[in-house]
Length: 380
Ligand SMILES: Cc1cc2nc3c(=O)[nH]c(=O)nc-3n(C[C@H](O)[C@H](O)[C@H](O)COP(=O)(O)OP(=O)(O)OC[C@H]3O[C@@H](n4cnc5c(N)ncnc54)[C@H](O)[C@@H]3O)c2cc1C
Image (cartoon, rainbow, N blue to C red; front, side):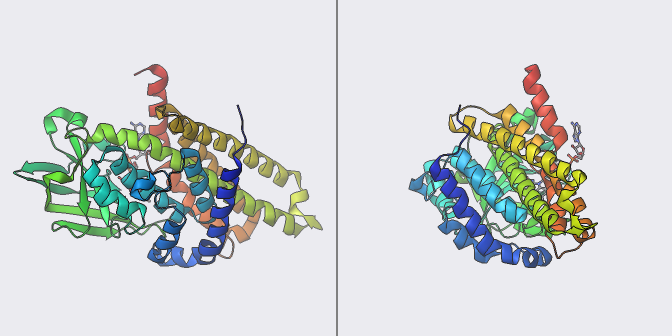
């Protein structure tokens, strides 16, 4: 075993960190307050390969590994978790689904545009009445000659209103339960597809989240993604990898909160000394540093196994569960160490505290991760 990153991976970390500090840090609060994903950032992300991190070069990807992917997401999340969430949804959900299950023509037509950052990707599984129980969805895809007609609506969709390409999951054979669900690629602007309400969120506000409505939305039969009725099974595979991304996002957010807390603790003086001299503060820092290390190791293990072609259902869920929950504690301690200054927008603490809660919810809540892990442990 070797716990060190390769030299090229250390260089990758430094490069993404410098990019995030220079191009994202100065605008974090502006984008958060405007609740706007900065489309002007997209070409800059693309220039670094961050819109096609783990994809083959032949489609315009950067051909990096799953561990490299974690490093990129971590470094973005350390500075702005909302931008990291958008990059993770684009890469790890929409592009990943097309990359894994698309045919050659679909990859040429859609993956290349996504990976080059010409469009943002969206991925629609969740509905108002079907979140954790995603297979209980109501949206349907009905075959009509050479087309599929999609009806229904999707909720909480990252890039729902600004995504150029969306993967939509819909029921195609109600009698077959989760084995009767298929995926479709729908282009923004297709008649019958409209962005519904944009969510006004607690955190992750620079990442667009909207409802998407389908009313007799007709797409050519060639837009079926993967085999008919295999959409939900394929989705579980997409989520196995996607959850490693959310784990990395959690590690990065926790690291950002911890770094901010440590710097503040060294500067803030009370009772004639820096607050970092108090054991109560030191223990918080020590506990967080230890938990972040443990979360990073779980995350890299899952990524490392993925790089070796192994199925990572259990390891991805363990990493996502642990990392997201320790990130919540890191963000909470960051506010506590800042005292009253943790409660105001002059310091980054309050934003980490708002952003972090999504991580125990999105791509499967903590309760669902425990369910997935338990099923794997019990061989169900
Ligand atoms: C900012 C944001 C971005 C998102 N982006 C996307 C996206 O791009 N694409 C997409 O498809 N979805 C997206 N989602 C949706 C997200 O994946 C769901 O919100 C999540 O899966 C939970 O579903 P729900 O909100 O319906 O909660 P529910 O499923 O209603 O859960 C409510 C509570 O009940 C618990 N619960 C439910 N079932 C069980 C059970 N069997 N055992 C124990 N407890 C249970 C849950 O853990 C939770 O605590 C996004 C959500 C947000 C907030």
